[in-house]
Length: 286
Image (cartoon, rainbow, N blue to C red; front, side, top):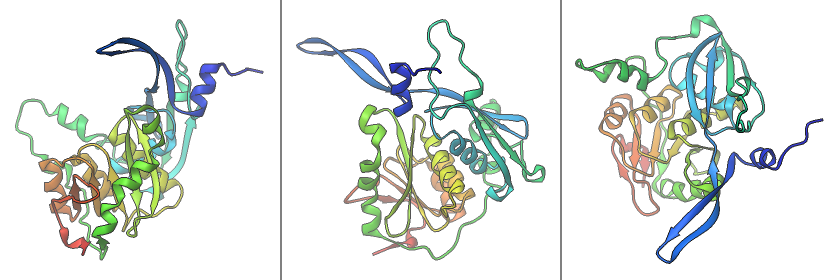
């Protein structure tokens, strides 16, 4: 029977690794062990075809892969997903010196109905990079997005309390820093799900996938995330029906343009006493 090493035990309990660090201050250096978040690649395969390699924080692999494929429009909807399978342990240990890293532990296979697949829509980032130096019209990124309506209303005092609620639940950030978070709240401010990752888009994909796999509704709920509110954050939210999107940082112009066009209430600089509402303020009550 394989006995876990101290390093493996550390990684099993939390996706961080203790790293010897020299902390330098004005009065001189000090030796310190820093808790560092792990970073590993995850290969996402749909019906046998690789659609992405995501650099991510280990843990929540099925949630990340599923959330990515749904929010990027690769799979039309969760009802089209037949099987989600992660190969390997939930928190894989990095390979040691001279060791080869197991590929299977960093791979998720998704089997979905073939008619629901759109392999031409892997990634907004990939598409923009491939656009070269010619004129780029970003409208193609929103052509397949629905317009969100509904009667969702959120009291202003609820919104102003979401940042603090999210910070309290960010356990990994308290331990190591260096990670983003995304959370789903209901209109009363109840925290339904929270995920952390080294990438803000990964955190969003993880929390979306978490909710889908557990039957937690996303429509008429609120997405709050760290980092700036980019167009990816808005398009991912629209695809799963989230009409209120908030960030603790700024929003980009393209995010605001897409939010305005697709009926999303976009909020930036979410704090305890103020926030900036860029689009569709009619959903905010009070």
